[in-house]
Length: 536
Image (cartoon, rainbow, N blue to C red; front, side):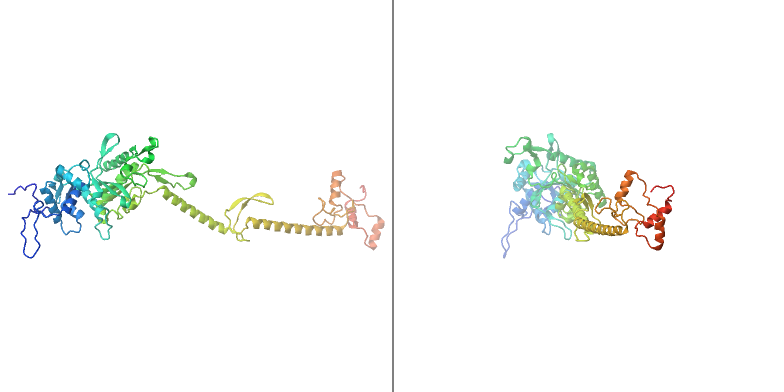
């Protein structure tokens, strides 16, 4: 037959406070020691104070959790159970249930417990919340998961080589309630963590034990964004002279200054209560459903010719990082356990809080693309180096002004630069002019030696320097210079026909060659144009 135990008397389980021991008399040969009447379990003032502060934050916890949180180096939780027993005797804490693993749950008792914990934490009674009365009767499963999350943050990971923790339990607040705009329903994060020493002014923590639908979890992020949009009038002296509309600031910036990342305060989602595969799927499902709250807005600049690349603006977005309680407990908050919604892979907390696809990242990609394009352009231009002077052009084609006016100049592999090209053109023109002059001189000499013009008796090549002067040697059968040919055509005189040789000239030609430069042509004309019926 079991006996009912007094509420102020701890039981004898391993995770419960030890029975009250009678005072021991002093022994010979050792310092006198006697448990105080006020705290018969022999707990220290410092430990009792720490336990009160921890329960003021966590609301409900087991002795094992308190031991790992407050005295992680202790071999057992006996000292914590002794402190709980002494505090229970003073009516400051009580136990009203057990976890599923049969560990006793402890909480603050009544106004006295809240005021004592508030004194330790430096908080007024109005900010201490409730005592979580009755939470332990159902095992306080959610509270236990929140406590394990806090433990992982404060003490770090338990795995080999895991990162250490950050801060103390007093950096946390649980079950904090925030009213949505208009006094509507409240947003109540499972935990609010402040770690400005590492650049995290505030982090809202949601612990999901997979007991509610992903839709309800995702709806929390939408509610957070609605809350964070709320603005209040700033009391900053620097804005005293500004217009009323310009003095409005987001309320959370007054509560947690120092937030420099884009977007609203971040939210950490810690999931538990299922297997690894199911938890991965749950994180993804919540991300898909809450995309509007954390996704931000996409921007791009068409003139950059970035092929659709751009960046996201997070001014009206809630940064969300997610992990599992198992990963968090193994590696700690600074380990690579966090998946930032909208970003690949898992990272440490500080890395995960950095927003992906920001304007700065876009500018870096744009700079890299420009450097690559510049390098490729430079390599291409090197193939277009001037074959004469080795000059590497800045551009492949351009408009240039030279001796022939404006020209579209395009460099070619193995070609010349504009300067060398103009020099080459000048050299070729000079060569062509010299060649043409030499040809002209040769033509003049040959035409002068051929025979004179029948009509004007000048050179058959024409007057030197005239527009009609022949530039090449005249044909053997040519009879007139170009000027006389032109005049004949303009006067429509018809073709020139030389006089027929006389009989005397023909007989004389049998003896010796006639001294007549036109003799052979006259003989030819006589054959082509018989004397009968023609006019000479």
